[in-house]
Length: 409
Image (cartoon, rainbow, N blue to C red):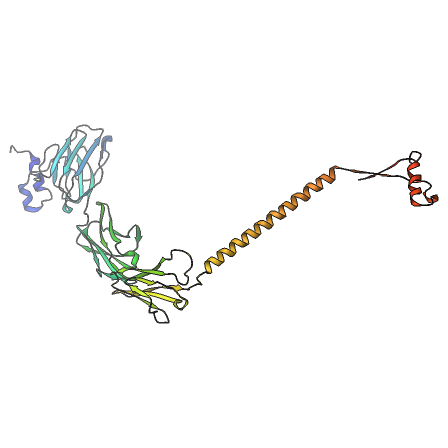
């Protein structure tokens, strides 16, 4: 009739038997076999990967076109487009571009049922055919962390499970505690064309893990930055610390006061805190007020170990302070002795230094100056009657005697 023969191709493709009699005959150029490269012409296309719900674009291109007819068929070999005409009654297919060298078609709202091979045909003699494959990716529909216990106790091992449901292909699950990556154990279940992945993580928790997020992160080509997290809640026994408020520094001496403070942190917060003296009774003059311990007038009977204990629902902890009371002047006498020793040592050092300097000066002086000595020989002294005569004879004979010089170096 007046309706072109290709209008019903989409409805008749693949029909066999008696039903085929009502379908129009296929044109003579309809390919009976796949042939490539006739007369130097080539069909070109690329595989398409698309996320479910997005748009897939199929392109059938011809190199060295001679105006031959281009046709696109679906996996059931139903004609989607013949030239720029769409026989198939599926409005999701839309013509993007048509020319002698290209037929480009878009498919919106892609679903898994659209996955498969799509055929590009070129009506040459002999005809040519090539196919492109559409692959549909399905991101996980749900990502959930199940934790064995909402509240854990320090040192306990807990189990966490992360499930990524109905993805295609199967997803990869990664675990993180804060910024540190951990290793879990994954199992994959297949339901029809979908995959459900569950990853199990065994984690031994400590007090440092309280309030830290545990993250389940998905690696999948259809989605980016898909993750979920749970914050750990860890209970732990108290941490106890004793600090000395007075005296801030120095010795604890007789007659002086001592003030100690006990601090404790835990989860839950400690409610019971007490002071005791280890291996002895608490002195009667010791005043305990809450977390503070005060001894107003120390004496040596107070020596010993004082302990602060704190407890909560998890357990009990303590911290000790060892008290030793010194004599009242222990620090002062020690300071005076230290000063005396320092003064004496300084004086001795100055004296020694002065003596060394004096010796050096005298040595340099004697080295630079030489002494001259004269000897006079008294002649006839042996003949003198007495000592006075001998001296007179010696002085009188000085002019006649030869002066002799003796040098001492």
